[in-house]
Image 1 (cartoon, each protein chain N blue to C red):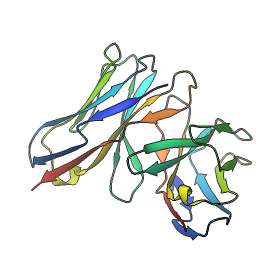
Image 2: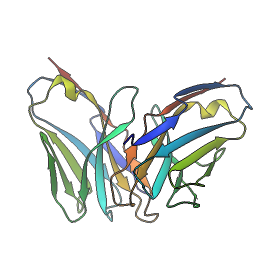
Image 3: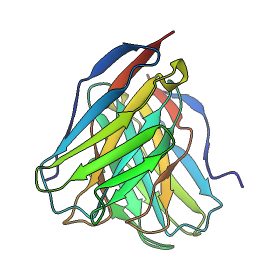
Image 4: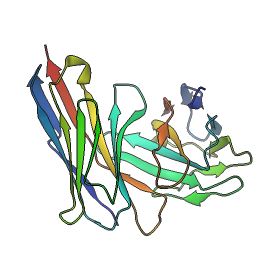
Length: 113
Length: 112
């Protein structure tokens, strides 16, 4: 059974700082990994999807990496802004079922002006 | 293009009452999912569907039923609501299992 862990649970940084969010997963036989953002009281918004054949995926100030062998993914946010404040979740598929994602509990990020 | 929509946004039920949550997507996606989100438990999959007319159990299916009679709609039913079903329910869809999941805004359900 896939288990996904995110560290830290909460992070507070000053505006402009570069930061890294960590995600680890137990079943490395995955075909992709997804990062999502959730604002309070809202649904999840997809940020990046990394296929198993890729090592990195970039979108604007966001860069996600994937290391299947070590069961780890990182989300790098450059030059953080107050608008980046949200909860960030990573999700890895259950390989045996094929269709199911297992989510971490998220990292709650606060960027202070 | 509305994406994924959910109805209702908020509902209060008494124990034992029934209700149906509706999810609709206009992206012609094959896969649809129902999750619940609870503090300290994260997002957990209730049921999912890999195409019109199909349904499958997720991680926490007990007390829920689903139907996918039309490709664009995925219904989640609670036959006899219990306080343990108080949660925020999210619907999601994706084109295939390997593609991005798109989420709806959620339904807050309170069972008294």
